[in-house]
Image (tube, rainbow, N blue to C red; front, side):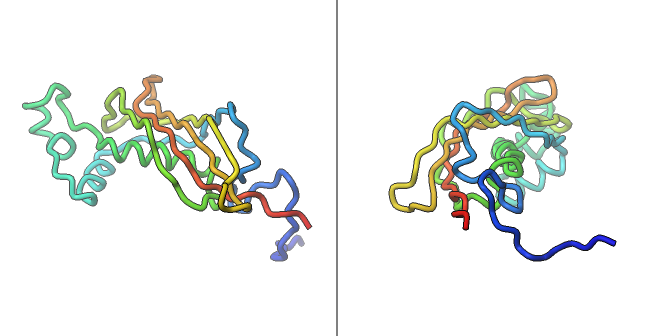
Length: 171
């Protein structure tokens, strides 16, 4: 019979955080991560997100309006949902439990629309990193996230600067 040990194991260089995130030292400029998670966007995603953020834009929530008054003919997925989904898909492979916080996002672009039924996949490139000037236990990593739909069309991208924990000091 095997038992699960609840005793904490000592950290070793190269170990991920127990929840799976990478530490500052684990990110290497030029590396690109192709995230395994994908997500098909639903009408409910779009409706809930638009309503929770108090966005009454009929372009997102009114099928009749979209069919009769827009070039798309159907509701567009709220671009801020797409942005959040893109970054969210990246978290399990990168920053889960190792980020101190986001410092900002720049160069946010939505070059093509997302509609209900589109399946999103994401890549993350490590574009820069530097030690923190104020905290010796942290550093700043800049990510370039890109989201694509099922046919390979780029639908969103942004650069995100994250304040990241450094790995624990080994005993």
